[in-house]
Length: 435
Image (cartoon, rainbow, N blue to C red; front, side, top):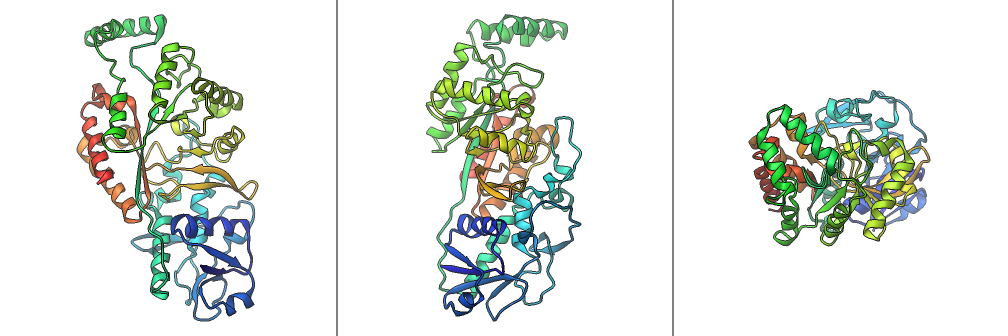
């Protein structure tokens, strides 16, 4: 067991030490504020305080973990481990030139998103405003990298200290924003589609829509057999998030009253974990969110525990408060639409720490690193360059034995129209992720 000394034990300190040591490094530890106990202890130990005590492993504290509330920081960045770090310390005996625990806490709690910021047109905190983007470490899982460096220090200092092995994992996830391109849209939406195609002289789509509606060919967005293949062929465990809200400007799935849509959802739940994909409108209305979770739960006849926000609309901490109030235990929204990488600078799941109430919650956050729409629509990458970006991200996650979570859509797998050629990207990602 590892004994850690700190002059003060706080909720913040307990939270981040639990994340670094127990969840990422998989080691048992105890924190003490007794200097006598620490000095007399003959086992493995670390000092996290203002001053070194003896010749022990020492990390100088920058102070964030002993504060409460949120305040605006003027962060100073230094070079460290081929990237950047912040909360520098000026004690020469410290094993790091910065406080990795304060910095990790700042990143994973999304401290900067509690401060005033300008939202984009969808009401989101965008990547370009983040310190990770501005300091060029958005594509680095810094928290995991720092944890690995701490592990190396402990191993060098205590060669007989045993670290349990933690393996890299891959979790493919899918958002079902529109279950079908043509099927089950109803008379008015189908008629409008025909009129739009006729106006644009898009006879190819008119023919395809007609064939689908007459059951003479498969709907382009009906790619669920490809997702099922991940389970049967590769042994993966995909998670599927269903948009089950009322029709609106940004919410255009099948009507949630459609019986055949219910059948599809039930069939998906036979093979995959199914979570709710809260609608665009629900992000500002708890009653809508509650209704969507209940309706999906009623269809599946089981409690919904997983969630990912439509359009990735996270308003911290309000979004997470709402999910907690509905007994959601796992959220997969932590990422950016506009950039690939690590919004919280971590590639491991972690519990949401509520800075408003200074407490660790039961909501586990699962950060994703890659989204199909980001690669194509925001970064304007072609298939070959998208594959290179994916491989670079996966390499960094594998290097720290983290978890790679990809976000894809059923329509992307159609390999049609704007997604022509992207099925190859998908399969190369799968092959590389599991290699």
